[in-house]
Length: 448
Ligand SMILES: Nc1ncnc2c1ncn2[C@@H]1O[C@H](COP(=O)(O)OP(=O)(O)OP(=O)(O)O)[C@@H](O)[C@H]1O
Image (cartoon, rainbow, N blue to C red):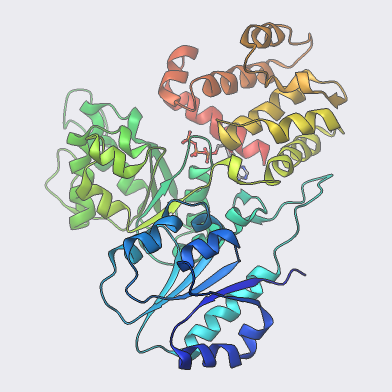
């Protein structure tokens, strides 16, 4: 068992004494701040698992090192304050820093929170030396790195609320899995999870896709159609690639989120939406707002709770762990015992994975198809500098490979080349975005 480290920055002698005398604080390795440098800088120099910070009218410069560092994703924070307005602290809370308790402090609640953290942190495993899949899992998410364990804690907390969530993360980092996991951990789990790609909605049909239509409402409306708000009634609606929806269409979403009501095209009747909305983007929302790709008012409605999904490069030994995980599942499915060689593992660990978990998963898929018993570095097709050689290698897919596997490899490769953009991928493959979605969903179901 690892002993978690607690960083304490407390000026009030009474609060400090109460904490130091409590049994739970004494179980941590306690690192107390000094008054030589700002606490945020001290934390950067000696990272801990949890920081307890008494805020005392800090300047922006005190918070800045923290906001621009990786610590926010890796550590948990408990802030206590006298309740004065602190915009920087608010920004930290929006980034998922943790708890903020205001005066008068409820000591028993603070100690209980510390106790919870102690239990979770002391159970963190050392990086796994995986032979099979040995990674921790929360919902549909797999990974044991600190950043993932922190994400699990955040998801557990937000899942039980009805807050709208904006999932932010690079392409292929697992935003849809996060949304699905939130749904499964919520009280809506028995109801439907409906996902749509906002970038793939045709502008003429957006009202009908969102709110449905009645037969005859417009030319081509041959029968009644349920929109996604009705399909997801009682459950969760996942709006993927929200920033790819034209802003004139975004206002339609804004209206239903504000009023909770919608009206199918061609009807007079308004319906009450009982839907939890989770949206996702792989853009920085503030930048998307500045560039006119996301309405600010919609952002505030969607991001009642923003959740950041860490890129794969920040997940340390999860990278090789996930490679083993995907291989173990594929082996089990095919009743095979293919192995990743040491050299292949080294390449996996040192590659930079711009396409994140999806790219890693696809690399294992390709390697599985191309390899016999042992997966060698060349089967992974990761030599991105030599794309010609990669293309040639792909052309040399061995005879006797099932057509379904070839189709899957073609789809996954094209998706990767397009950095996860499903619209471009579908276009290049000559299939509809819907077909692409169906196939990807099928792979997801069979792969796990
Ligand atoms: N933590 C994880 N554990 C297991 N599988 C994962 C994890 N994260 C992502 N994946 C897998 O990686 C692939 C991409 O995940 P997902 O579609 O959720 O990413 P995304 O961020 O929504 O992608 P996009 O930006 O293209 O919408 C899926 O096959 C998913 O199963």
